[in-house]
Amino acid sequence: MLVARGLAHALKSGSGSSRDGGGLMKRSDGRRAVAGTIGRAACVVALAFNLSACFRPLYGPTASGESMGALLAGIQVDEIAMAQGQERIGHYLRSELIFGLDGSGQPAPKRYRLKMQGSEVIQTPIVSSTTGRAEAGTIVANVKFSLENLDGTKVVTDGVATSTATYDRSVQRFASQRAARDAEIRLAKVLADQIKTRIASVLSAKP
Image (cartoon, rainbow, N blue to C red; front, side):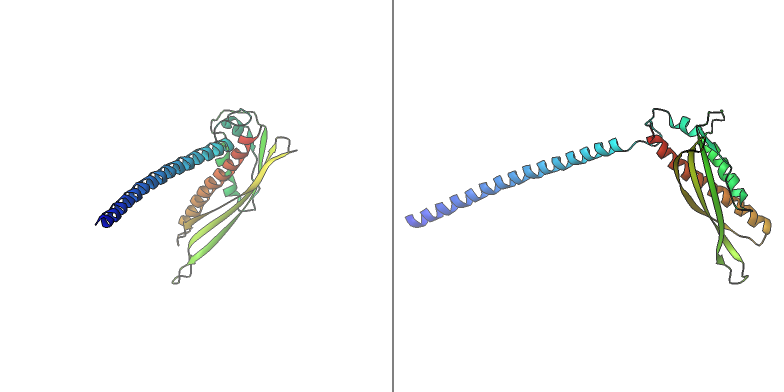
């Protein structure tokens, strides 16, 4: 009986010690998990801070200290070289850029000039099986642009802007021409935004 009671007491003490050890291990694991979470959060904050230091807001303060509006207003937009018969979209694009770069209406001294050369292709991927006529058209435009200093001796940045616009074609010729014109206007707005954004990103970092 004494031996049995001794064994029972030993087993009970052992199980209690095991439970206490398990509790300590759980508390230790919990502390490590919290510490790990805090460490990961600190790394994320540090990374975000470093990235914010690397990237400059597009329309915020520029590297030169001038406002972006003043830099963009200093761009002279030249006539766009387009193939014969495609002058209309060139006219729309130039108008959008003049307004987008300097919509104030106030004359500003020019320090850059924007040269462009564009092309336009009309595709008709949808053709009616009944009439054999194209039901829709897609205008594909590509514009090469180059921003130079005013005397043309140095290229600040250059690139290519590309976009498409789709329109419905009608059996009525006037309606189709109007729809095509509206598509060209939409296309000019998209191309102008592309060119303006790329130029602004370069000028914002230029000292």
